Length: 150
Image (cartoon, rainbow, N blue to C red; front, side, top):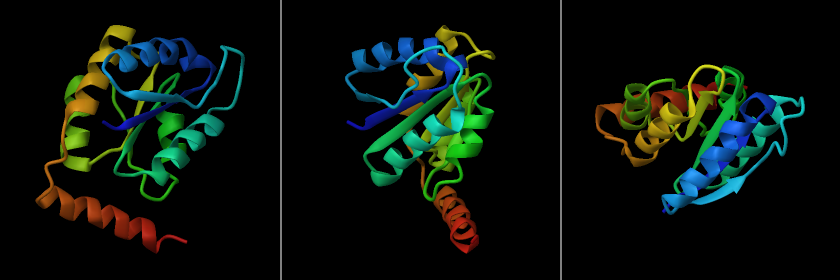
């Protein structure tokens, strides 16, 4: 079973805390990369912590990031080689980003969706498998762009 690295800023703190227990109940090992309170903080610190951990174990882990919208977290996480972070606010996107994009970091907005939907999104993200095939060609093209950038 994959390890789940999870992080949030102050806007996502309460959702992160609730998701940790939920994901553990599903049998996953969850590693909390912060923040540890709802006090104001800087989301890039936590997105970087999660992305670096997932980057070390691309086959054996996923990341989950929560901020106000999920956007800042995804922008930061996607700066790391091998990370494919996707903002999802619906279950269809969560399933498809795993199946077609082989996303390894899920980003959500605590000010956009509620905890019930967040749990459903997490369930689909964690349970959906990458389809490979023509999608693998496209994911490899993304990696080629990433490698070409300096």
